[in-house]
Amino acid sequence: MKAIRIHQVGGPEVMKLEEIPTPTPGPKQVLVRIRAAGVNPVDTYFRSGKYPVTAPLPYTPGSDAAGEVEAVGAELKEFKKGDRVYIAGTAQGQSFGAYADHAVCNLEQVHRLPEKISFQQGAALSVPYATAYRALFDRARIKPGETVLIHGATGGVGIAAVQFAVAHGARVIGTGGTDEGRGLLKKFGAELALDHKSPDYLDQLMKHTGGKGIDAIIEMLANVNLAKDLTILAKFGRVAVVGNRGTIEINPRDTMGKESAILGVQLWARGQEGITEAHHAIRAGLKAGYLNPVIDHEVPLAEAPRAHKEVIESRSLGKIVLIP
Image (cartoon, rainbow, N blue to C red; front, side):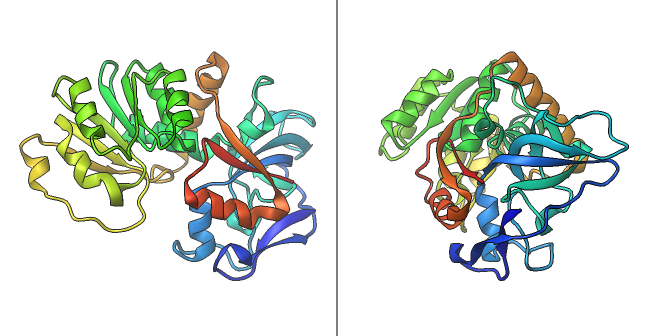
C-alpha cells in the first residue's frame, strides 16, 4: 500500500510517499480502505518535533480518516466488508497512521458513517468534533442560554464548536477573518459573526451582550487573544484553551473579581472514556443533522507537505483532507 512515511522530524519536506506492506487485521480488528484522511495542526507538531514522537521512526502520521471496511477479524461481528466508516485513530498509533490508503483499527476506533456524509466529511470528524465537544461540555460546561464566543470559528474545530453550541441552545458569537467565513457562521446559527481583525470587534461584542460579557470562550489562538479574553468575560466566565502557539502575558487580576477560569483542553486527557463519550455525541449529531463538517479543499496524498503548510497558515475555511 502507499503511505506517507517520516524518517526524521523536521519541516513538511520530511514526509515521503512510500510503498509499504498492507497490514492484516487481528481477530478483533478492522482493515479500512481509506478514501480521505483529515489534516490536523497537531499532525504538524509531531512531524516538526514540537511534540515528542511516541513511536519509533519511521512512522506514518495522521489519526482521522474515512473509508470502507475491507476486511474484518475473525472474532469481530460489529462490522462487515463494505461498511462506510470514519476512524478515530489506528491500531498502530503513530507507527502506521491514517496518511495511507489502508489502516488497521481497533473496534473502539471505528464508527459508522451515514450515507449523507461524504468520506471527505467523515475524515473531518474525529479530532475537530471530539475536541469541540470536550472544550464545550467537559471543560467549559456550557449551558443552554449562555453566551459562547468561538474565537477563530472558521476552522475545523471552530465550525464543530459552533454547530454543537447552537444545537445545545447557547447564544453563539463567532469570529472569522473573511466575509465568506463569517457568512458561514451565520448560516450555522451564530447570532453574531465578527471580524477579529477589526479594531473595535470587542466593543461590538460587548454591546451585543448588553455589557454583560461572555459566559464561555473557546479559544483557538491563546497566545494572541487570551489577555483580551479575560477582559470580556462575564462573572464566573470560562476560557477553554484549545490552541496556542507561543507565550503571552496576562493580568491575573482580570480573573479575580469575576472569579473567572482559564481551562486547558487536551483531547485525550480523559482517556478512552472521554473519547467514547464524544463520539456518541458526534454520531447522534450526524444522525439528527445538526453536525455538518465543512471541507475547504482536497489535496492528493503525495502532496501532504503542501497540506501541512496550508493548515498552519490558517487560511482554510473548514478542513483540508488528503485523498489517497
